[in-house]
Image (cartoon, rainbow, N blue to C red; front, side, top):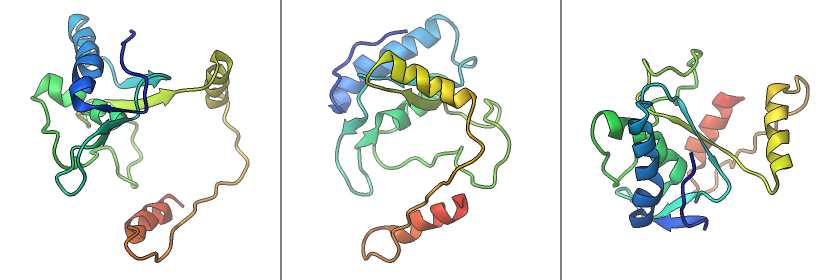
Length: 159
């Protein structure tokens, strides 16, 4: 399906709802797909961020993370736009694949590139990943007020 929205990196919530959320929700409901779809794939031209306030009750958000909550909205009720929402799928020790029975969210990802060939190469490389190479995890260390301990803990767990 296609949506029409402002292709800038950041949009306001008043644009996000009618131009991104509502067309996707309407399509899913019209075709009776809320429980059949597990992943929403965004492409070039869909904004990355939703403009808002900062702080503990922040309203700024990533478009991808807000769309992940669309399943909850369709099945239960809309989430409040203030404050963080814990990702129920984030569990470093989990080994089971994503399933609707375990998680009440959509997985949201992006296929983005400058050309169609760039995107095609992304898909081709994903179907035949390399089994050799290096992964570098860059930890911040003890930089005051950087939030490094929490982020560094995530990187340590990933390593």
